[in-house]
Image 1: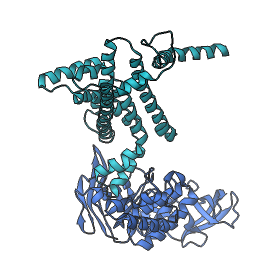
Image 2: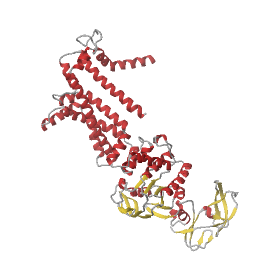
Image 3: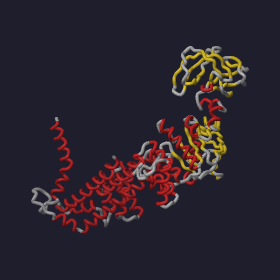
Image 4: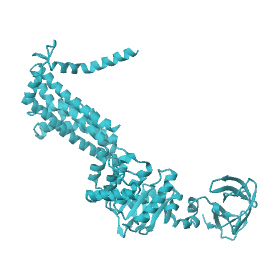
Length: 332
Length: 255
């Protein structure tokens, strides 16, 4: 039902290009891990290696302590939810979901019962006789999920499964995905480039870039205390202020030298790390907050992004005294 | 202009179908010769043809050769198309070219080549040797039709099936073939039609047991008779039935 995954110094080379560079990662049994990164960062390659669709150039993958080197996808305790669903168009939903059980020699009546239960789990109760083309995109995604979970894999791999859905549906499916993972207890490895999605569902986010793991940790940790500038920028908008010899452009700051990183929503009038009076350059209402560009009076060339409470009316030219509630200092 | 267009259409259809219509009409001729004037309607010739053991044996032979050779051509063509569409091999383009090449070679040349080969290897001519000839001409067709129909859609489904534990032969049998059922059926029916009508290869590569076109040819040598027309009409009826089946079962459903 569930198993740990151990990725040990895996490298993947396609011709001259290095898709993965000495990647090591331990995933605990029952953990919901999200591989997050821009396209071409190696996250899908890593997922394919776990699923057995690609063999790493070097390194190895253990699932539940078993070495997977040379084990074909059909013999691995993993199943995959594909981005394009890849449902079998000539089969009913019940036969789609039961396909893996059929390959495992489960008798027809048993697998039909199990398939109906899986369809119920994903909210498609009583639709077993339908065909995939009769469904909407979100429903097809649910069938793909039920099909992959029906064989009770130890590890479920999800390859940008929500990428083709519209935003509202994607948010709803995230909640359901998380709830289903809690119920079945299977290890989920989920690939996405959407950092909001990652934070919504992950126990742990693994940020990847250029074939390497940049950072990993719980969403709060990765967002608030990123270990690299790439992670800081990829997890959300951030102000980068160079600090040299204890001085920022707007004055002395009590932090180490490097790049002082401050999230826009951490800039408040009561922030403990004092920045000083800033002029509002422009402001726009975003619904949940007001997003404004400001420049410190002491450093007019520096432009900082600030998220202010939605109730605050800010006009251009107004001066606000700002500080940072939280910050990190990183080096290039 | 409009009348001219209709007249042109009518002329085109007359040009194409007049010989067939004449053939069918004179198969009902109540007389010794299938030539004008038309002397009245009789089914005698059909009765004679259906009672003719040699003709009926040839008809059965034709049917068996057509179905068996088309099945073999379809299986080989499908497997080749699947492999060349899925696996990147050195010289894939060349292999595709070589597989389709027999389409451009005349049936006479293929028949002569096979005849040479059989003579030199001591294989005796039979329905089997003609069937092999029909596989040679229909394999490129089956390959080309199925290869053109393979897309990423099937590729993704096949990958999912493997992921769910299907061994390769089950992927082909349960996923690839059913997803390609329309093009596979089209290729099969076309192959059967071609094999059913084929004369030159069957003529050169059979000896004692012959197919229907060869039997009709030997009937023609002993002169014109409405019986020949009756056989020809039966052949035409079978071909038309195949085309209608193809339309109803494959193309109608694919829409």
